[in-house]
Image 1: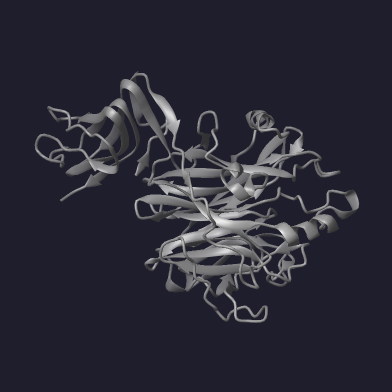
Image 2 (image 1 turned 60 degrees about the vertical axis):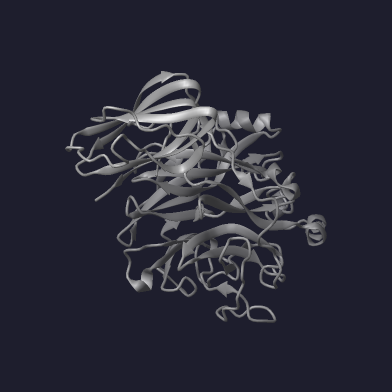
Length: 473
């Protein structure tokens, strides 16, 4: 569906009081995946991906084996499957020998793995992946520091696209496929200077016809982020990574993982490493457009939403996944701050501190859970009384239907009128994610005549979040 963001170029004629609002997701309160095998017994990370494929949910995630030494990078990538997203099977794969028994490791061997499916690729390249390569535990041998791309026929046995990095530097990268654009989108972390600090920032690249573009700057933290961090009791903020959700023909929602910094910064390198995290939303209407924050940058998911991470932090998978009538964004939450167990001393930056290493072995809590919301209901316009606005649907040459994602309060309603229709549609009441608009002669607009079509939305104590134009025979 096409999401209704306040600055969309096809919205106009705002009349009455309209509030631009962000939906609050439901946070599942218990872990659905825990570190309970040898290869993930040292901890799990949701650097990874959940995809719906072949009638089931497939999960690739970064894991820490029980024999992980606690220092250096980690590149162990585990695989699990589920029919409902609550119960996950870690079936032995017999691909990467490690530990006392067969395990569920695939051989991708990259830090921060991200997987997507290219529906137009040959079978040998159906699964595509990106990740960071550098020396580390269970990493692919011989890789120099950089972001790599890989491909696979089954998602379990991987080959690198090239022995050299696709992009230089970094450590966290997410990739998705956008059906409307018929291309992939890559969001990778870079660390340029911003406001006197090295800051984690988001750059993006495009995947099309089997090739990746150079990356360009996409969204950087600014003074507003630092003010928001201070309000939360921190000192500054940057963007650790960004998950993405394709929406409509070209739109994309970004789920920005904000890292709120505590002092001290890393010596000699002014980079904030310790702190907590939260998720805020951004939106890009078309490829190449500027990314825009939801006004005020309200928190979408907070580390304090879960009982075991009130003083901790979390990271997310690369994209929300559709399950029934809802979207879910899976994430792993922990009971310790980012970098809490690593030293910031000049001589030992990034090395485990003995006290915290022992503390983690005794007390670490980490688990994967998810945030959920009705499909494509992330933000939109709400009218406390009565208000209207127009949506330019563009020229349409064949019969079509219009569907709305809306919610009306008790006593409220939504109705609409459209070019060439003498009467408005029937009232919509209640709460639906894809309600058909029904006119006096049915739900189909039969004679659009190729002219630009304009839809006027009327809200009375109601909100609308997304719309869809569906061609019909």
